[in-house]
Image 1 (tube, rainbow, N blue to C red):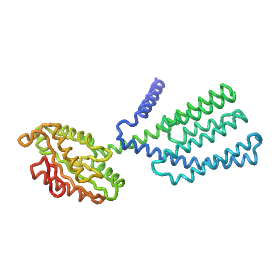
Image 2: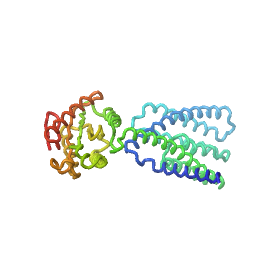
Image 3: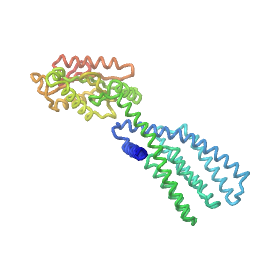
Image 4: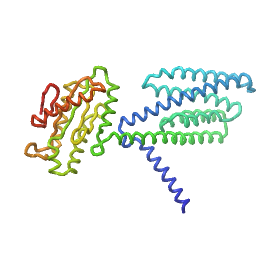
Length: 384
């Protein structure tokens, strides 16, 4: 019984791992998915560098063996030529490696692996002609499985290309069915090994990003918390132009204490979540940040906007929230839940948060003192 339960548990773990792998993008933000793929690309660049150095050493050794010790007279010249070509190509990529332009890494990686497949395939043809063996053919799929981290479509493309060429060549040479079967089996095993390697990497990174997301997210609303706000703003600062402006707004739900007194704190949390969801639907997460700063105060950050653009977006946001028609906790004043917003705008640096926040807070204070349900900004202007 224990053995049976152990086997069931193992298959259950495998099933769960496969399910996690195929749906690893679930519950991750788009920027997290892009970041994981960027990390994968960076890891592949490092792996390629190490592998290229090893290939260079192997081809150097191969040249020495072929020149001084090889007894294969018929293929000796061909082996020397292929070794020189592969060594030259690898050296070329090693020289280009430090100068790869950001964003062109995938093109660099794909071109290297295609050259590797072509060179190793040539060695494979020589081995088949001389000895009828497939060692170099086997080298291609298992190298692709164990060195780079390849997604399933990438692995299928590489294995399909290399295995298809090998099968065509073997059939043209009239090789036995056994060699054809071994080639196909090697490709299948390599695909499984490669996906296990990729799955272990992806699942580890996904768990890391989900943990980071949890530490940066407010549980009640799903918005960024203070830590997430500061980290996202740091990203915007690194990416912005020197003269680009940034708007920082503080949004406060009007008479929210009365709302909690009237409907209860649980209903207050639901109201806050409805507003947060509407803000997330309105503001593009790629180009803005919405965070819960504390209580019913939310912070909105809009990088690379003019004063007019910031005013238009924030005013539309204020009116959208009122249009939700959530019942007010102070119906004598407003029939529906409303918000007051104060914002500041200017060229922003990392040290400027306190200054920006103070200016936005002063604008919010002005909105509250002038009857609430207002948007107030620089130079004391207010609009309903």
